[in-house]
Image 1 (cartoon, rainbow, N blue to C red):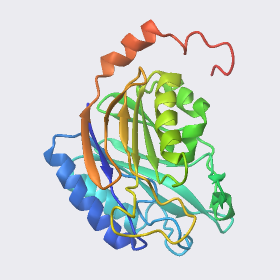
Image 2: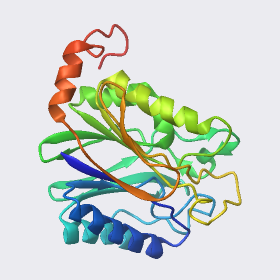
Image 3: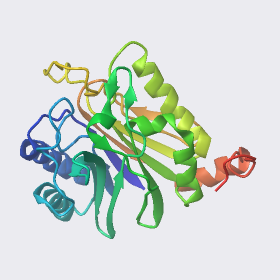
Image 4: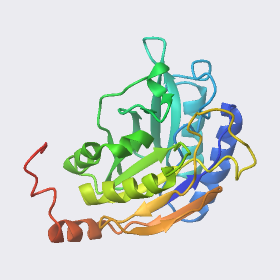
Length: 266
């Protein structure tokens, strides 16, 4: 299965961000991809009040994403914000396209490194997978990458790949942690890990003005054996890659960590 990871820098205006998504999705379609993934906070960047931009899953922005999927014939996955019942928002991934309509609310909120996502965001609770042309794919968001049990839950649900959409926080050692964690999660669950993050806004010409996690780039495709097969640098770019689904079964035969578990088995 050919997928595309679109590493972009989004701003505070959902309509402008949707226009970028449309352009990048058409570019991905021309590459022959079946699925294109955009980062967490594609709808609007962190560092602004999220309540005013949040919309329901049947609102204009989500419907705009559906229109992009229809125009291109792709499954499109992107991060947005939806209203929560307690006055907060949920950090939501919308996956939409041919035969696919699903959403995932971020389970693990980023209350770390001096940032408190839970001040304004309500956590999700459900593990979500989608089926793309018969291939089961799990959905995860940013800080989720520090919790291996989610990716094993994807595997238990039949996933051979996980999509990780992120807006990674910058700081000393953070790139190294991103690279280590994405490789480790692929190994934990012996699946493909496709990690797409926001590009570094400084490289894109927009210096961040807060502690908000606004991205560092370095989106990557990691194989089920934990090796990095392709990656981007800090700036905007499109990574297009083919996933060998049969490789997952081969690795799981060689390193049957899922079958050999003694704790936490679903």
